[in-house]
Length: 67
Image (cartoon, rainbow, N blue to C red; front, top):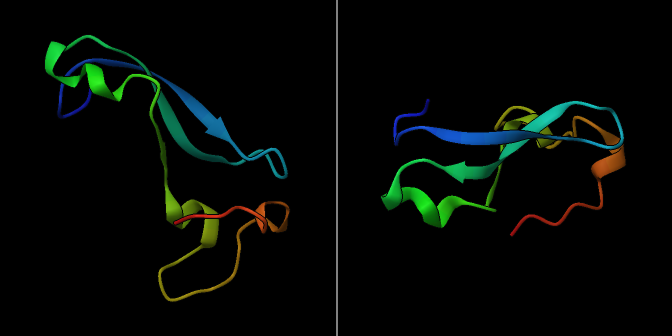
């Protein structure tokens, strides 16, 4: 259950270190939220560290392009 209603999600993991870095919406059980199905959410702080840090949490994902 999320603020926008009931969703079925799956976790996204880094293949380098195995850390959980976000989730993907599999099914939205709310008609107005169906547009989220198949979309992913990456939690930037789990990838690059704290806001004031330029250090990557995992060097294996240093090639990841976030625009």
